[in-house]
Amino acid sequence: MNQLIEAVELLLTPETWTGATGMGARLLQHLQYTGLAVALAALIALPIGLAVGHSGVGRGPAVMITGVVRALPTLGLITLVALFAGLGLTAPMVALVILAVPSILAGAYSGVGSVDAPVVDAASAQGMSTWQVLWKVEVPLGLPIIIGGLRLAVLQVVATATLAAYVGSGGLGAPLFLGLRTYDYPLLLAASLVVIVLAITLEVVFALVQRVLRRALRGTS
Amino acid sequence: MIEFRHVAKTYPDGTTAVEDFSLTVPSHTATVLLGSSGCGKTTLLRMVNRMVDPSSGQVLIDDEDLASVPPVALRRRIGYVMQNSGLLPHRRVIDNIATVPRLNGVSKREAHSRAHELMELVGLDAALASRYPGQLSGGQQQRVGVARGLASDPNILLMDEPFGAVDPLVRMELQRELRRIQTEVEKTIMFVTHDIDEALALGDQIVVLKTGGEVAQVGTAQEIVEAPADDFVAQFLGVDSGRRSLQTVPRPGGGHTVVDGGGRPVGVLEDPPEGSSEPRG
Ligand SMILES: Nc1ncnc2c1ncn2[C@@H]1O[C@H](COP(=O)(O)OP(=O)(O)OP(=O)(O)O)[C@@H](O)[C@H]1O
Ligand SMILES: [Mg+2]
Image 1: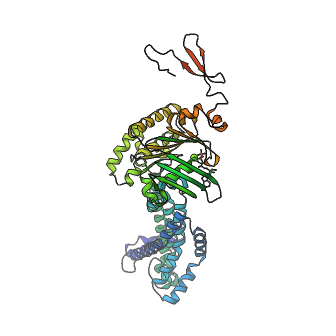
Image 2: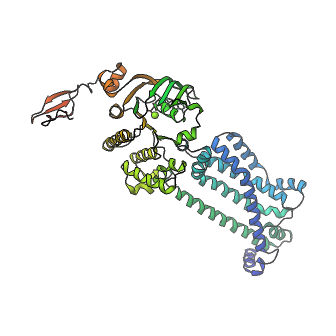
Image 3: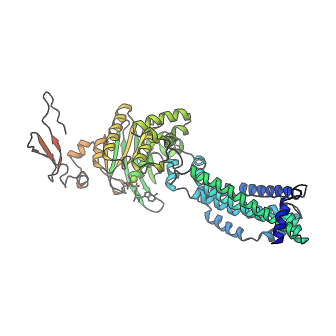
């Protein structure tokens, strides 16, 4: 309990946050890692997921790959990639992208696939091209589920990005591992708290976005 | 002119919806496909805008085989009112109506003002313009569907049971409106229904279909009523139930009541006013 109070006190001290290795810089790095990993994963998973959802082709393999990739242990993956890529950001980034892909992929194909077949039929019957059906009908109607996939990915990545420090990169994992190694438990706790608050904040933001979207689509039923 | 030449359709699951169907739909007239549920009406209609491609045979518009016409462009120049309204749930009524003109590159402003006119034409309150389809009744949705089909002022209009969910009064009004549009601007209309009265009211040419898209009879309303080709058509008309054999019985207050073969009153016959020889019903 004492250590928790110390951790909170530490967080309330302005000096904790300043400097190149301060909590502020670590938080920023952490966000950058998360953003980069999710963006890269989205770049891979969204086109594939949208294509699979739209055409229905490759749905089986997509579901299977999603399951298999989800089962990969992240720490093992980081270690493995680090053996080839060495210390630094590459290994954790590869692992984080791999971690994020399944959720985004699943969100994209289920989102597009969730749109009622008669609605899609009606859209093409009125003369929409395949692209127009995708962008003007399937993506907007599937958006809450697509965003749900991104939300899940961000959540997983933001928690797991602490492991970047395990192979010598920054992020909130750096003070966390430092605290662990030097028995500085208040520091460890403080870093964990920041990760938790960050995760909750992102979660709330996404929940709000999804809610707004659902409301904008309230005519749907 | 739309021409069906020995078309057949077997769906991928093995259902044969149409076996061998041939028909000429003259330009600037209304042709009604009449038949009971599952006889292939929707399948035939959707061949005209290539939502369904025939398994064999050809469909031609003005002598052009549709097999070689790109479907997207084709659909944008054919009005299609779908059986279940087929509105886009995430677009407001006004935007749903404006769909095809927008796809054809008409400005939003112009498309919306046209859409407002059409709402009035089909009897939709202007206040409904910014609602979403999910917030409308079934009959209102159908009327939005009709307005959307008319929006780009297409030469060919495909209508699949467009008035099924509207109440009889509005239905008759819409039929009248359609008739008016048809005589005024002379569109080529293909109209699907399983309601014989609607078919008689709207069709210049009526095609009675049996299962598998088999043609039981083609003719004008008069030809079909006066001389049903076979028992199937007669049954459809309600001849055996006496629905079409009308008689008059004198009315106590003067004039006559018209009754059908079963003795059910269907209307009154008034004595023609002076100087007119036209009977009224
Ligand atoms: N996509 C499809 N796949 C398989 N079978 C189909 C498909 N669409 C229609 N059918 C079948 O083809 C036959 C004709 O269907 P169609 O929709 O053309 O009938 P319809 O005359 O329009 O009927 P209704 O009056 O009920 O709308 C039916 O037996 C139907 O089950
Ligand atoms: Mg039908």
